[in-house]
Image 1 (cartoon, rainbow, N blue to C red):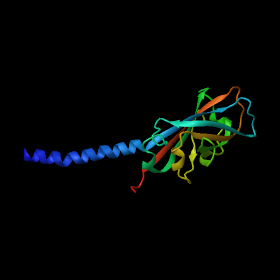
Image 2: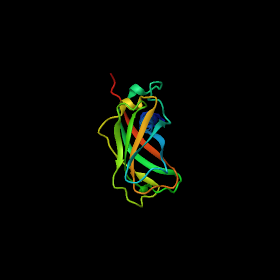
Image 3: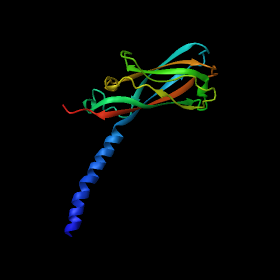
Image 4: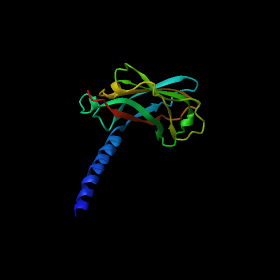
Length: 177
């Protein structure tokens, strides 16, 4: 009986600690999503800009949230672009693109992802090359984040193409002061 109690007393803190660590891992990764539109009027060989506001299911890092001061070293860990309408729009119609994040007023714009020399048969889902030269701590504390995509088309589309951008963001716990 004493061994069972002793075993439980030793294992219980380990189990509880691992749950907290798992919660920290899950909580520290969150996506920002937005829809960007490529109009049918866009022509090949020219640079165009698509702009939209992004949001996250977890707004706790904004000024009205409760975790803004608890995170640091916020960075992009993945960026994916997917055609949603039409669902079969070939992202290979885009020759190259760059994704920028900024505050809603477009101040402090930061390059976060890009893709150059996109293959003509890329399909409807594409991973982008991330750029982590700058931490995004201040941006994720903003109530709204502006996403700007600068792109050049390889082929025109017959109709407007809606593209969903998913930026997966990682944050570490801030150092205690």
